[in-house]
Image 1 (cartoon, rainbow, N blue to C red):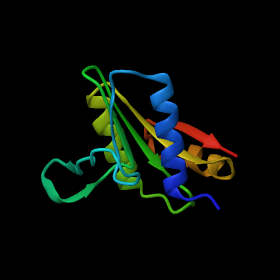
Image 2: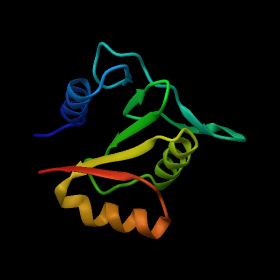
Image 3: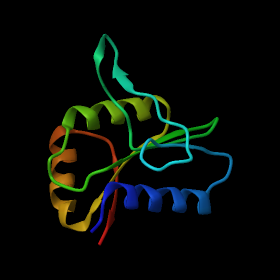
Image 4: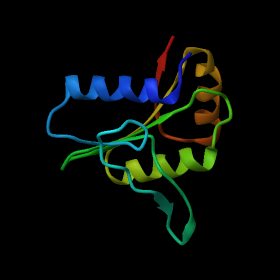
Length: 119
């Protein structure tokens, strides 16, 4: 069975193989710094912690693992806005079976994100 920890470890392995000079943060796999909560300006109570954050002095990438179709649109909108300000990317990692739903939501809600899918 696939769980979030397995997927996050795969993301980290891929990042470490392809990139240097990046700091990886995640609260899901041990051995990494924890990402900070990203909050909407003016609303200190409402915020989300990304599954994986990849930071360098040039860009910030956020990765959110979605293993079911119970999407949190507010979180996606916030992460999309946050990464666009930092000239980074918001990446949604999801099983191939949810690809149509994810694409549909991103289009209808005008959320800027890259989709990474797996079988």
